[in-house]
Image (tube, rainbow over the protein chains, first blue to last red):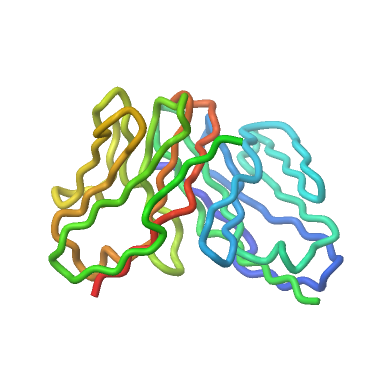
Length: 109
Length: 114
């Protein structure tokens, strides 16, 4: 099945810093979503982005489907951005959503 | 904004007991899913459900698990005889169509099997 790799596995940032999280996937996808898992365990939808670029406030994401990667940008990070960021993809051919192992982000004041 | 809801938020049970986890998907959605996340690990697909039947399931979804849509709003996951290794966060999700569509996740049920 499709493989999803996220990097880096862990990231520590000073408040106000910018960061880029990466998601590589091994095959063509119909769906790619970025999630933020907060300290209470809830999965918050950030972006649905199988291709192209989207922005939502301090967050933006770009997926280059032909090169099989997606990037999540966090600008001016805040302590509330801390948590685990997951990339999940759905391959072509009616396959289920496959999650990466996540990037654990810690933003310190 | 419509959202997926799940109950209970936490459940503690004894090994061997049956548990039922409940979900109310977004009302106009047609596809429903269960995922689980063992503590510290990634989220894993369990099962998808459409038109009152299972459309896909993973290796994890063995005979101990079952799903049901008992009425027009609820979607349930039953674990018949819980094991210690069933302890996990269970997420329900729904989508309007099967592909090329966002899956919306509920807040999860944290299950602890003692």
